[in-house]
Length: 162
Image (cartoon, rainbow, N blue to C red; front, side, top):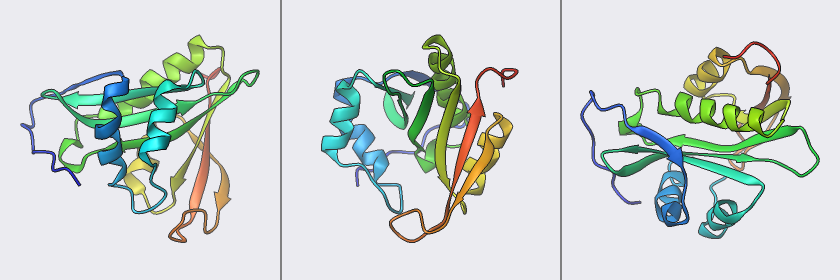
């Protein structure tokens, strides 16, 4: 795995749409997941797909986070497929800013809901999603490759914005 250097606590970074040249950085971030990692082929597919919308978080020019929102033609429901922030970049609200960017894009596209799956044991992610108005829709026993349980969460985009 490529090492990402620690950065100063006072740097907020920025969130921007992902570009094709971000593929290697996104793949490096995928290595942070304990299971269910994307391959380079999958990352490249999402970056060029008209139904996938991707953002990256940058600090001091380095990609330290990414989010992929998947949509389907004719559907009013989007799915956050992947969200990850490098450990040394956490605490700067980058995941929250990427999720908010995805929600705004989903609203502009006329989507009514966003769904996602999260590991049941990922308390920080679950707290973020709860703060942003995501509610538990379904428990997913043994959902992840390593046998970990998951939760399917849903956000109604027509509700008061959070």
